[in-house]
Image 1: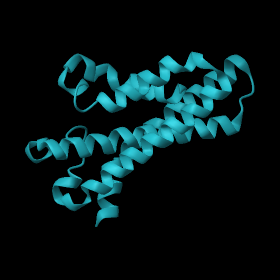
Image 2: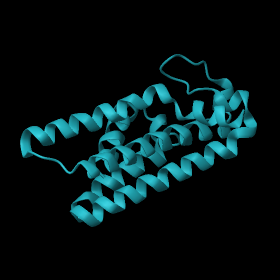
Image 3: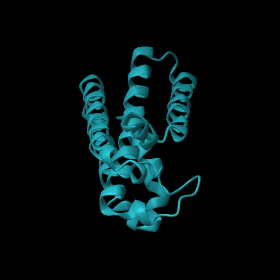
Length: 159
């Protein structure tokens, strides 16, 4: 049951946004600069997916740990998966998936930082800040909720 809960916590249907955004970036690069380094594209996609899984699982874990998930009325587009409410024993596994996903994001970002230079630092820091602060701080400010997901996805994909 724990594996199923972890997978539900990743919110797989929403992960389609990540390759769509990465592919828009690739198409823009192809149209404006010419050929791209395909290994870097695949690595960027891996890092972006790890970031998206990281924010989803961290959000699931934090909402469950705070008790918010038990009070939430879910819709198809808000309220999380509710997976940990039905399987609270998986909370530690979901937290570890969040931590490992963010570690992969940082490793991929570090590679791009080493390859392309320090100009990526502000974007990477912004992306990681959005991921880490999303549930506990950004979600409590409605206007930031409107821009935070886009900033986080874009920043994580650049970093």
